[in-house]
Length: 431
Ligand SMILES: [Mg+2]
Image (cartoon, rainbow, N blue to C red; front, side, top):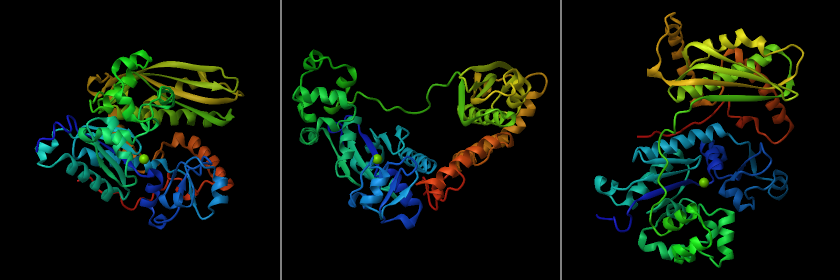
């Protein structure tokens, strides 16, 4: 069936309903059907289940008010490790239909399914609904889904019929739907732009697309607003951002520690933690570093650092930590309070470009790399810091102790810490 006049491009937007609260209910069956809010760790609601919505809770509501207005609501600390695992599952499932998927945010993605109707012998509506069904069955949460000729229209569509709705918005329906869409609700027209438009008498998105191009120019609207104006008319002018971003030149990881410390081993362990994190980033980008710098920042906000060249290029901590250990005293002085540390890995190159050095240091480091790849997999699966180096332990143990203090003091629920224990009974499978 030829749908090219209704959908010159076919873009689908997926938006997880009450995402954080829904993930909490998906991973713990005892929370299903119950009023649940997340955001306990920050003192105000970040996400709420529909049951909590019915009791009068809303986003941004302070937790004290929640306790007063709807005391039966279950307050949870955000478990961002779990949310990002669910987000990755969402992207992976969408990618089983097309590789043209933009990982837009933790609970949203776009898929460009143009042409799939021909290759699959299905309509665009059927394909969008098939992806929606697979996401919902696999993840156990519902999605608002919109199908349209542009990203901006797909966003308009997915907002209609929430929760769990599907809205198809072909070119023929644009006028009808945009008459019913407030200018404030259009993606890309953040506060200032829509306020400006309202001031000029533009109330709905339909009013906006009635304006000629010259009118936009006359009132000083720049390209982003003109792109939105075109998108709303069904002319796709925003592409999907897909795939690997540009390779970094250097990777920097910094940590501030409170309270400040003069403890030599504790400060070294902070650097060790930085090195671990920087190496994980470098490995993820498929790169290796042959130079580095590290610094310590004192309580007086002065910086002390050195720059070092390595014998070979590495993407695992041991050789890098050895080099830092050797030069640590050039940076650290007894009796001074330090409050932050930083490590930058430099001279990054692709793995294939690395020339092994003559002294065998490279070959030796290669044997260890396997261990760190396994660490990456475990940590990506079960949360940062599930496995870490002994030399980083002090840094982690102390920050965990301060976290526990927060837990015992207030609203943070220890069971949803999520760092050390992530109880996800079922994540589904991408077929
Ligand atoms: Mg959402």
